[in-house]
Length: 212
Image (cartoon, rainbow, N blue to C red; front, side):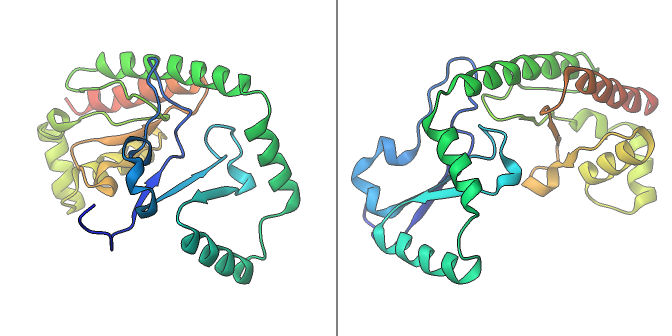
């Protein structure tokens, strides 16, 4: 409040994918008197599985919105009308599909958390929302075979070497934690079928076993 020259952005794209009866809150809801300094970005990609439709939206101070309209109008002339109609229907019609999707994601989260936690040396924490999990592999990185692999690859990022080896030799894709500023773990998506989740985590476990 003391710095009225600062504009803050909140990304609410996962507002509907929350688990364990968590309620969605963002800072503008908690501190409404700062509404003129907050800008909210959101979209239909995650909650409604409409990633390819490329529809997002923003809410904020009027001068920001007007400038957004100017830039959007000159760069893309606006989103396709079909996609806009689809997004409007998704946002305004029954939200039963979102409830079912959230339930499915929570079941997958529980599955992937259990499976990762059963692998010796892996620490997995159940996320409160979205569809990613970030297991801690610090103990795995200490294994002599992995240390030798790090030296061989001449890479100072353990998570990057781990993910490259996992993909090249076990055909499982994950994102190195270093991309998010935390090299202690990797990011795994569970926006997959239960069958693929089981296969992927089993292969990850095989890789870790092979490092012994």
